[in-house]
Image (cartoon, rainbow, N blue to C red; front, side, top):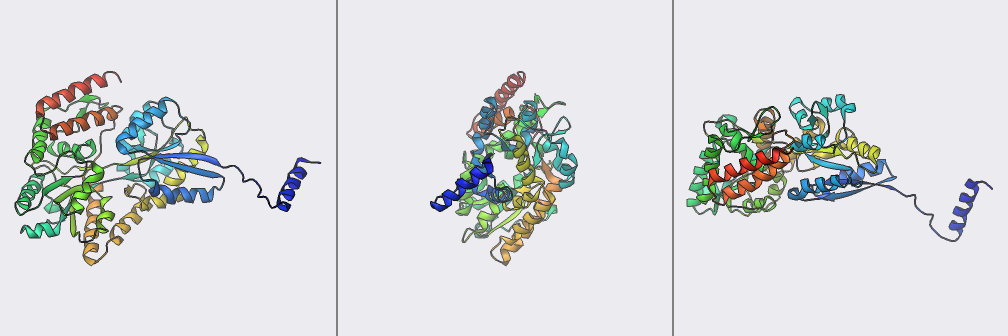
Length: 423
């Protein structure tokens, strides 16, 4: 009797006894992200449908803990860290440590799918170490009802009328005099991602210099001057201190802030908030400086220690350069993939609930497109970025809290020098 006959006989017997045949074991592939699990379900389900022998387990880790989670699991060569989201400026550091699989084999496809400005987010020493996924811009949201109550005209969305930060703060103070609780809310006021913009705009620079961007420069005269102004918006009570990014948009949604500086991921939630009438304009800039809008978001990487490296690569390509790319448009961030970007921009308008809202979404779409083409400034591509990000997050929070600006920046400078010397 052949092996095949035995198997068929067993299946027949189980059918007669009313027993279900055992399901074929599926291969489990692991996806790690800082995004909500539900946001990833459309692309996960599409891949599973096309690959019925695969089950994808999605795990989400909060942004504040994400870099440490990656480092810990890479340190133990964890085989369950397979496909994972990579914060764009961390690509050089991760590639230099051997934490990413190389994608030079699909260089042509990558460069056909995204514009030239987006490519540096994927590169280390000229090689592609991650796949393109999303980017971002920040918008200045304003509450129309609160401004009207204070007798303040709505700002213009025209590029020629882009506001300076000094104008925004002055207007915010006037709104507070009319009874608004907070003049301005910064969504990520303790994170380098958003705060870098002030220093880039003023001409102070990103805080790193040199060919390898490993020479810290966070205590220059311009850094001290810009940080002193930054501190003043908290010292004068215009903006609240130390509000977690995940909670900050509630202040604006509840009508407690005249202005809110935050990401485009807030559009959908604000559109679903009854009674919230808002508009958007481009990110402000420091007077005498230039526009410098925060950007970048997530790339997709594959771990060299993945238990199923070939399958992980297949899924990563599916969700970026393949059929799954269309699902990027359903997420909160702006797609880097051109085809998904067009759909995302269409959705930015279609999420509006009325004609007035559709106009604001058209303004938002136009501002986003302009910023991505002309005004965005990326975080520095340095193998020391993770250290910079961590040190400066604590530094900005200390400055918000009223610490002496020069002393605090001097301490950050010394800490960065010491840490970089060990890289």
